Image (cartoon, rainbow, N blue to C red; front, side, top):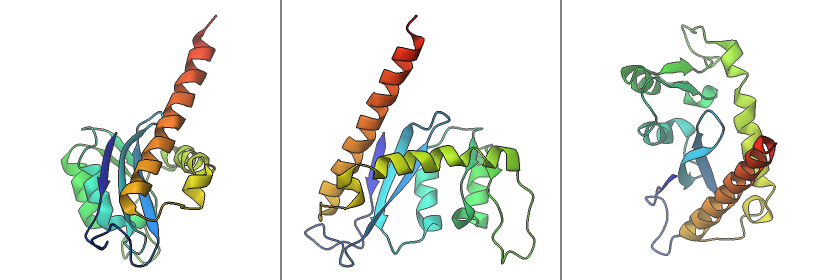
Length: 158
């Protein structure tokens, strides 16, 4: 899993002056985390989406919410041959059509994020330093991956 941290808004000690941090996550089709980007939470989703999408596979489908509705993100996905499944924002002058059937699969990603937040260290954000919090997020996601692999192994055993 590729893990990145935007350190531009944090001070020398790695603290966010505002005290809040957001985790931007990219998953594969089986909802396994592929990339993680840690940012100060006042930063918009669309500004970090380009960094996450730079590592996605060619000709894959990108499903995200309205926060990533921007022409730059759409162009980045289309240039690499990917399919865009992003609903239009309400204030877009010319809204576009999107595959609502595929968009319904987005609930799986939201469930994944909900499961990750069930861990107390994630929901209460006990770690105040950005690099320590990043380590906590990575450990939590690896624990999720291991439990997911265990379930698949049990299901495949006759």
